[in-house]
Length: 329
Image (cartoon, rainbow, N blue to C red; front, side):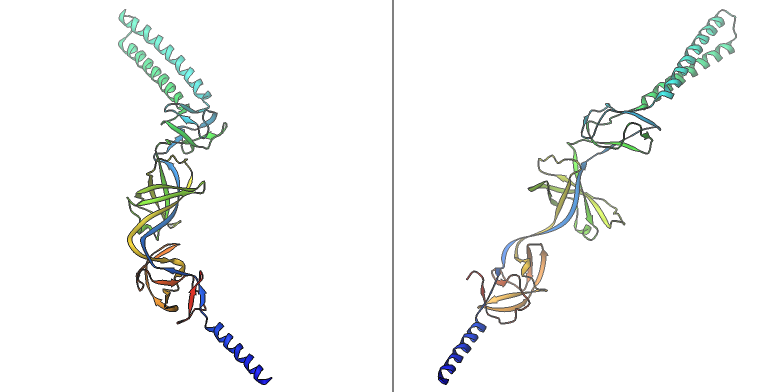
């Protein structure tokens, strides 16, 4: 009986040792060659290349609006009418004074030719008539300012006025833009601005089109930033034949650097500047130097050769010399 118990104990010990020394299953990956791309992320929106603000040249109540947001307008088309009642009264008065002054001028000229009036009285009548006609023309010209017209062919991007509002020379009533001439304005964090310059390619996307990427490029970076937002603005042009709605927000990824034929590993394999190298079925902690790092892959500058097998998603219980095998086996 004792021999049997001893035999069972030996078998249990052997099983425990086999369980303890058996290779641990882990996820593995291989270093491979590929293109490393460094991206600068930003948010942007579509706007007209040359937006036009519609502003009144004088202060007056708004009586009528002839265009809504999204309407296509032509240059010279009436957009807003202001209350011109007082000016029309002034114009009627100016016309009456002009007619009276012109009649007086005619009589004075006729009397002067007949020798019944002096040259001074004739000249005074002529000057008065000219001044009255000039006042009439000025009032008529000012009347045209009470109808605000489109300055370009385009669409109404934004309308911030309703009938009854008071228009002033400092208030933007509408904003116009040409949908055929648009650009992207992106906000760049000041920490990344040194890596951005004109000519760089960009990838544009929107939640409205989950599977669509629009190509563009940087045309300029504003020379001054916003100290409150700690950011700069970059202008981008669209390279594809895509008409993006003005005002649409976009995710902008600017390609700041490319490295061809780089050694790449999954970013998830990194462990505080090291990787776990798998060699002959055992783990070896290997120090590395990284370059361009993305969410999916990271460039290896030194410390790891192309084709090397490494542990992916390393865990805290990994140790030097630990026996491992791939999860797929």
